[in-house]
Length: 169
Image (cartoon, rainbow, N blue to C red; front, top):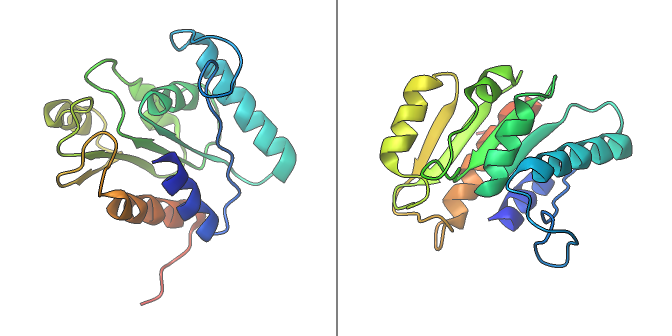
């Protein structure tokens, strides 16, 4: 999922940075229940900003990363967009302030067969955050097996909106 998001973003000529949270893969450290991971997201954004300059930044996160992205977005000024992919709404609530704080488009995308982001929770989020674009992918589970193409389409549409690119017919 994360690779697909990066591929679509790069195809639109967006600079991307993806990383593992502490204790995941080859990363050092141990899981910190979201406290330290929020710091990691902020540090990654700061690092990317230092590399690319004053270009507006958008933030995308998948699963636990979506929850961390929302948490950071609630506190960070000037984000050009926020994409939350399969947020684990069955396990934790998203800070609704994040969805209102982002200057640009907010996308929440999940599959209709996602056990960690059930439809009822997604509908509650839709009611509580009407500014967010809620996009569901029919039959997709939490890992989007067999559904990476429609996920890419949803992310691409969001990214084009973020950067103001209009798709030619």
